[in-house]
Amino acid sequence: RDAGAADAGPRTDDDTGPNAGDSAEAELFARVPARVLRFYLPDLVTPEPLTEAERLLGQWRTLADPDVLHRAREHAEAAVRAAARTAADAVPAPDEDDGVRARLVLGRVLRAEADTVAGRAPERRADLLTAATEELAAAHRTAPDNSTAQADSALELAAGLHALWRVTGDPDRLLSALDVLAPDIAPWPAAVRRASGPTEGSAADRHRTETWRAVHRARLLRRGRLLLDLGHHGEAAADLRPACALLDESDAPGPVRSRALLDLARALRGDPADEEATREALLRAERAAGDDPALRLPCLAARAAFHDTAGEAQEADEAYETAVLLAPPESVVRCGLLTTWGESLLRRASRGDGAGLVDRAESVLREALKDLPARSAQRGRLQALVGSALAQRFRHLGFLPDLFESRHLLGQAVRAAADVGVRAEAWLQLGRVRLEGWYRAGAPVLFEALRAYENAEREAQEACPDAPGSVLVARARHGRGAVLVLLGRPSAAGAAYRAAREQWQRLTGALREVDWGEVQLTRRAEREAQRVLEGEWGVTASRTMTEDDWKRLAPPWHAWEERADSAEFQRG
Image (cartoon, rainbow, N blue to C red):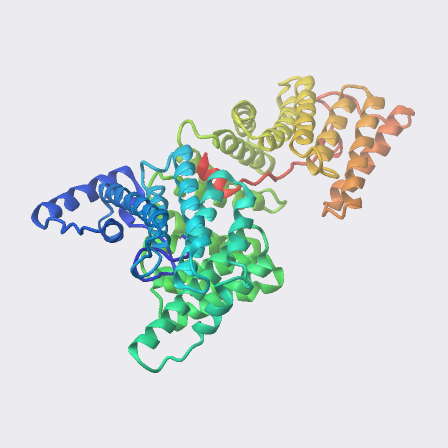
């Protein structure tokens, strides 16, 4: 969760709402005790709407009863209207600008309402957050320079824009939020000076210094997270490092420090040179999480991904396994973890020495498929992953039923997958499986393998229309060339291999990393197709060809390369 001034009271560094708001059932169970409490302890309604709105917002954060939040919104809207009438009558506010304070509270209430179950429908959430940012922007414009009200409204506005970006995906929201937190505009230069004020003196002086320290800390956390979501890892780390240090100094709660350290680790992972710093941040995040499963789960998932990237397979598997055990049964979170773990195992099982891992990869991916909701947009992708695992098991162990089931699942995947990149990868895998099925069992016919490779090429080009080159396109063209040789069409095969070679050249020309072994295979296949055309060498297009000739002619078994974005997986 994100940082910012979180409520109408003291600032916090983590704007998480009440835990009870996480589901419809939890909200229902929050309503019941809240209503019982109100029956025995009736609310002491204050005559002033703004004060009442602030009180109700604080009560909602304790009780998580959405009815309380609705009442808070009514009072906050009344306070905004009252402040507008006061301004129109040119009557000065008795204390601080009530208009700023009223809009700030209303913006907070609208943001909180967007996190309730009723507010989480995408259109409803976007409307609530848009309304919240409009109120907060008005508060920010009218707040006195270098005041706490200006700082609070800036932090809340940045948080609202950040949340709106998560709904709409519009990067302009992130940029607008960064503009509000720019270090050279008010109140941030003054906030930095005041945050370094004396810790001694009167109670009022100490409280003032601590207030500005909380503001400064919250700004660093929010800005770091915004930069992280924009992909500016180095700049994000530059803000998140001091923010985490300030959290340690202030003895912040473990959950707040754990989330901040996880974000720091994400930023550091963007720079390969910071591997040890990333490892340390992940371990500190896990220590700060303590024994709370809800906090340990993201720490373990992040550490597993780190170990996987670092090539530490045993540590990655242990972390993934523990995370899966902590995840709620049959949940989207558990399914996502199983999918990521299964992909890691499948990549390793696809290597030449991966025979010992292929059973576990297939088992983990099947478990993920079992947990997936029936109408999830990710169903086609998971079917393709299980099919790819079965194909790799056939490659290693030669069990023919695996090949048949792989063909069935990959065929389902290309029909079910909503993403063009997934379909392209699945067609490529299906082409290789169909080709192997023709050689081993005479079914399907070669033309079906040819069609699969043609579809893979077309879908891959559609997935990356502006890219300088595509590994998938090169592989699909190579596979098409192999089928054409078997069909006795060496001229067309040579053209397909030549097109694949040109695609490899475009990739290397754009400084893309490629497998030079694959490049050499394509070059050799092109030369041999030319020799067939000239009558110097030939391969009989028959299932009776020797195993050596088949291995020489057949395209490689490719590992599954397409990877899903985790956020997209959860939306599915």
